[in-house]
Length: 337
Image (cartoon, rainbow, N blue to C red; front, side, top):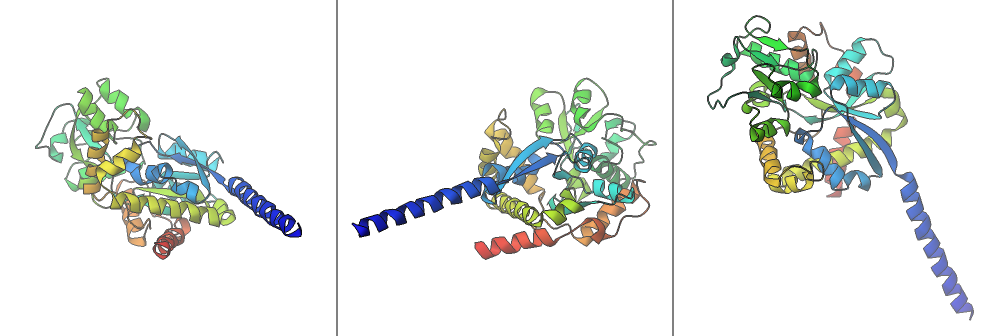
């Protein structure tokens, strides 16, 4: 009888431990308010990390919102409406140069190319940048990465904005597609899936990739305020771990397999349509495989911003970047394979 009672006590104890463990796992899952610059297939590894449960694996619940531009994402970050902002790292430079005591720190770089495409009103398989001479193009918000990358390409080809062509900056980033569809300008720049959707609907045609023309640019990064990182280093590391695993998954799987995962994020899109776009981004070497924003890349970003006339000098690299979480994420992944 004593043996039976003892056995029952052991079973009850083990059951209670399991229940407590489950309760702790649920309680310890942290909600992260993540604001993204736009909702685009360009950011496939992020959505894969969400849909494949990689953030869940590290105890993170993602609350994702579309900021509709880097300026709005940064506003959400500094106001406390977001914990992490996914946007161009130029936003961190602007905030630092404004003298903010709690700067926005870039801790992971997702993309290393511009993800936008030049869209015209007619098909042009032989398009060259010089065909923009005398035309009007919707370029995006002044000081934003899409506009600066476009202007960088134009200047490389000897075209001066405002002289050789009209680069409009008066249309908000998230309003450009609608403005172009309504008849404004000869060309616009659009991200996917909007660019390809325009072709399907007959509203425009992709004539060039800004990413291919501009080359390497540290284009979009994950940023958090310094105080938030100091208070939540484990959370930032876990976030980076999940993101890195999402990046590896995208690299190791076909465009079709990636597209199947992305359908949950783009439910009104056909699988083949998604797969074609993913393959385009894969071909362009779009994603930064180690998530590290290195000093060389940062200096290139500063040069582009200086060429655009937006800044005279950039902050020191260490002032608004930290590679430690990205490096550790790769190390953790390799150790646990």
